[in-house]
Image 1 (tube, rainbow, N blue to C red):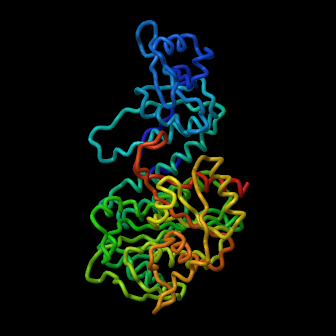
Image 2: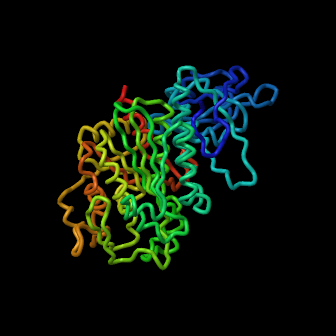
Image 3: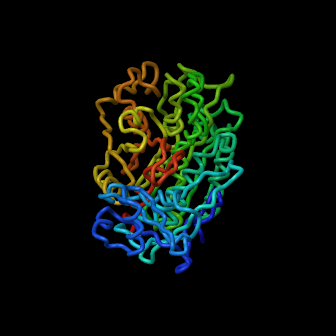
Length: 463
């Protein structure tokens, strides 16, 4: 069974063997010492080609036809492990294979695949991309699985809210569950109050598209219990504390936590890992209407803690509070939550390095190792309990928006920590979910963050 696709697209890979054109991935040393194909070397020297990082030189045949390509890796190829992603956007259409490269087969294939991503759902003209043959010593099935998870996250984030509101996100979640024969349930609208999810209802009730809680179960009882929770704010106006127009431009990505959790769940299910998987996604649109929640309101959470609303634009932690409480009631072996939660995380680490927070030092070490092994960057940040006093409220147990503007990503994590009291191992990821500029492995736009590292960690933990 092929991995699930939200948007059907052709594979970036081919299996045509001898019918493909060669790519010589080289460093400057290869050119200097002449240790590549003689015809390619002669053409490179005549063209003054220096094999600089990411450079591409097409090679003609004696008859003047396209005969292959030289691709520069620079002097230190390990600095950009997914540099081959540039080939997916730079090569002319056709079927190609890597002839020589000082890179692992998995890295060069995964890099090409990541770089091949295009979001063309709304384009009237679609490009014809090149394809690459996966080397025999690469794990083709796992490469395709990881690409499917990354592409799902990117597709969901890139889709504008008019086509990715709560109802459409539920449909994508349901399709994913059906593809892998997982159990799926949903609680919608006022039923959230009946089932004790008051904060999810509060944040989403002003939207014409009703708030909901999505849940998926897959795997076998008795295996390691893993629960994934993702923030699903399909659009965030800021509520009555409305955002300026410039800050709303990317708010379609505020369901990036949900998108990434779904991409990770795809990888886990497609690999048939021996886990007892549960996925919980609270889904809302933070809109403005006569029944929108207000600054100064106080609401009781599912856990019983009361929350004072000091800013309606700090809505993500509210819906996560109910979802985390619900997940925590079963005390899974590992709980992971992912959310586009704070701008403070981006101020601290920028858009490409998502922080994670956990009290589990062994888990933190394992995730750091997984990050390095997969080239999926992460950075641990402290759950500094000295700041816990900042989330206390005057008229309620806690506030959703501490004053002062200091340590915003830490206080948000500490807020969430209040709702996880039974689970022995919990980690919170404050992701951005967006690539601001084109990179070798990404054309820019919606982005998967941390899920390849998480997949690697989970896969290693259940072997």
